[in-house]
Length: 402
Image 1: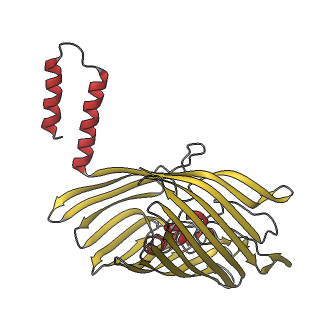
Image 2: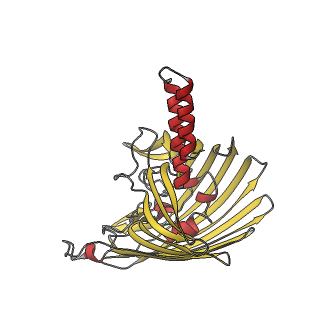
């Protein structure tokens, strides 16, 4: 409906009735105007809600560890709502923005401390060329590899299937004060680069570390109908600084130190053969502390999803994680996910995951066994309890997109 159209409709209703216009008519008219205005400006409201029940075989308890049945949300995908906009400027140029916030369904609280802490950026794009954007954005390790070639992104297992504590930045990797440039659809190849800044000039109390804090990310991604492949590198200096996404500096229960630098390489690929989708990824993350020797975390993942019917899908995956260097440990994880699409926007699913850990490290003269730790964040499931070298999660949930 055009601006003149809604006005004509309003005047027609007024002329046909010599009494007060009912509230429901005014509401209908105003809704039509609002929807039309959003459409003309290219603004889209969107969101995602995930909730369900999870059974955890080992969870930390006062007596050591115990099974736990818990309400959990944001598992298959992180809960979010946002606005995405595009305004045409002419000559194939457009202004674009995204404002996005995470939230929890258990109490309706925000899952981030600031109002739009998930994503918030503004930029300019040119059709067929690329885009230049400014703000809080997703690092290319997550954008190119994590969102295309992982069990976490390709199945309902979601944050339970991403690699331990998201050390390799495939699950989120959001970075503040970032400037990103991307060249899109160049022979089906997208190339991108990002840099983030501290916005500080004075010396910080910690020997100037906050001043030196910065992050950068580069990557490329090739996508065709049946085959896709991507690679990325993300580097973060001095994780205490304001530009860093602040990943955990422990791998399960293995503390790798107060980091000076985190650098992670990631390569992933997927292939579609009929109703079968197969993917694999490899990551290597260097964890360099401010004092002492560095550690390296290697992740190898393979998986696949088979469409049993048009609405049923079964996914299987395996991840091996190996920590070597100043600290060590090994983790093997098997993921199974079954999903049923009730509509284009809503799905129900079931997930089963088992992880086994092995190895030990000497801490203050004491040999400490390596624990299991499922999930992209310690908050996803929680501490399995002292000495728990295995952990199993069973989950049923519902996912709705709007």
